[in-house]
Image 1 (cartoon, rainbow, N blue to C red):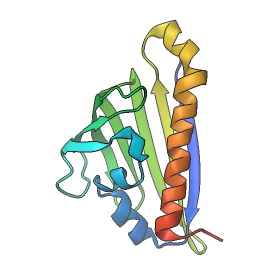
Image 2 (cartoon, rainbow, N blue to C red; image 1 turned 135 degrees about the horizontal axis):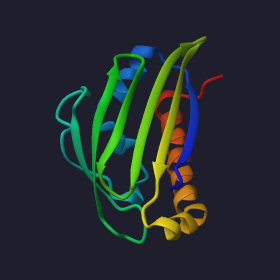
Image 3 (cartoon, helix red, strand yellow; image 1 turned 60 degrees about the vertical axis):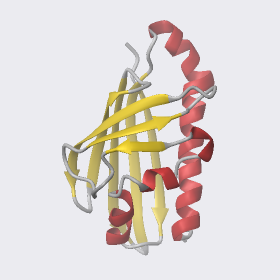
Length: 154
């Protein structure tokens, strides 16, 4: 059983409160997700984030295949961090920690995702040529969109 980790950081020239306000609204995930993924929120995004919140989405990550993704916000401390875990979806395991902290001139956001691909050894073979590059592409897109929305940290 191979568990992979994706670790990303980004600095933005905004206040901690502004960062949290944006990140704690599930509907903003659509704004920072590539359009080709066909991201649609089905339910659970009708209020700001809270521990125990279940959010249901449809995503189209590869080959035009629509996939239902259900996540739960399992942990949350306002203005510090939250954790979302997949309850149903494309991964055998998805545990995504989002941290934000104040730094000189803005905030630093840190994402740590521990995930496992399905299909055993076949999934492990596909991981370096499909899954990992796709996740990196999605997070690069997010960084670009957040820079467009909030400006570039200097």
